[in-house]
Image (cartoon, rainbow, N blue to C red):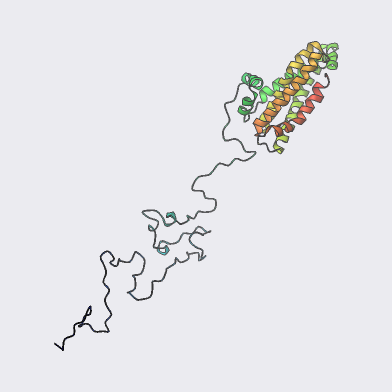
Length: 305
């Protein structure tokens, strides 16, 4: 009995130099190495070295998310993690946490429309109004009419209405009316026609000045609708005073009151016109039309008022 020794928790048949073997529990078996990675070293060996992607063929050395030359990495040099290369389930750059490289000027998500001053509108605000509805709309619903016609030229109605206004404006001025009445028909016709042409030219110049001032103040409207509509506003607003002045004369009190009232109405219509046509607030719109208002007051109305 003395020759036997009973040890506790020890194998007597194993030499002391042999290291103990590690037992793996269920569920913790060693998994095979993932695709592209070197197998794990044996237990107790050096840790695996981290492999970083090598620079592309251009040899720039930037990371994969900064490639100014638009050169993609070869499939063999892409990192092994993720969902794989460019085939099957999406490319490497489409994975979460990575940046897609695009060429300069390329927009794969669509071109965004940017509003720019001076550029034409994407679509008109409405269909073109016939000349009867246009003239009626300037008086009854000016704001909606100016907004709807801001992209259409109105040269036909503007030139015709302004020319007819100029023909009658001669009879609204006392001195000019007396000269026309006393003159013979062959002499009166050139005077009346020249007055009509002069008012058309005056309307074109004043409308161009208003448009230029509106653009200087930040407006974005076109010059043809602005000039044409301003000529219509100038002629239509002074028509009531002119009709009374033809029969009553320019010195009549009713004509003078109508002159000031129509001048204020012209200022309101010019402000609405410039505001709708050039997308300007009303103070700037009124400032853009100030020169035209002063010119109308001094040239047409002050002669009779």
